[in-house]
Image (tube, rainbow, N blue to C red; front, side, top):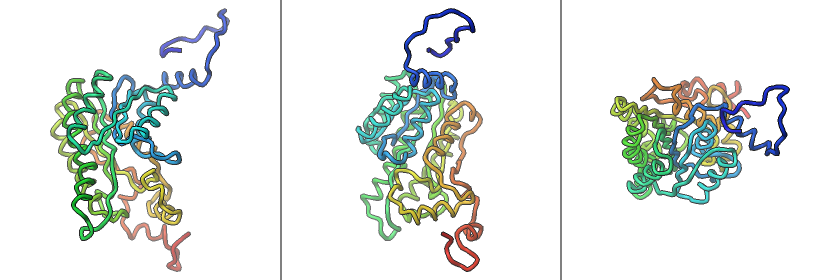
Length: 305
């Protein structure tokens, strides 16, 4: 049943028609959910790498599609991107894929061109690609340092370089950059490269918001806390429990929690919000170390199980 179709009045005579109940149910839901209707979104790092737990890009691509947006899924792994595409289309959404290494300017330009060519405009850019790096400042190596900075920070700048003119042509838009609480304070990653890249994302977001406000482009940043995603799927259960307990809410977040925040920032509901750093972290950034000791250490000084 197309959106806008009206049900048959009670008592009206009609002939029953065969139907696929699951598909019709999905269509009915999509008729009701229109927060991102008629919008076109690029989501980077949106390939599916685990069948057990989502990454932020995957969860956001699905959430945007559920709210009516057309999605260009960007990933350097074609198979991973195709899995996400299939999940979206099977749920009644519209999506296509673009395979690119976003560390290179040419790939950044071409993926924006692909979105505009496929869908006619660009409204939303979700810069969610990211990789980890390991080591303190004494342990880093030049190649690793450069790769992490290129993927985590340079990609967001250069995709935006080409996305902003496309959004201006569309009358405005929303750019959402994914940082991390590690970009605000030293975190559990013990990676100077990752921290530097994520701190740079925060600074870049604020500058972009100021530079492009009069273009009717909003630029905001989400800083996820210690959420459980495909990036940290290998974390052992003891460490995973510690990650849960150190935040004030004492619960574990998921990629879907970040995706819900991204939907809000992508939608017109946040039309007067720009330049914001939004932690999605169970309150972690509100707490100092001394304030969470009772969450993880008992009265006898032993770690709580």
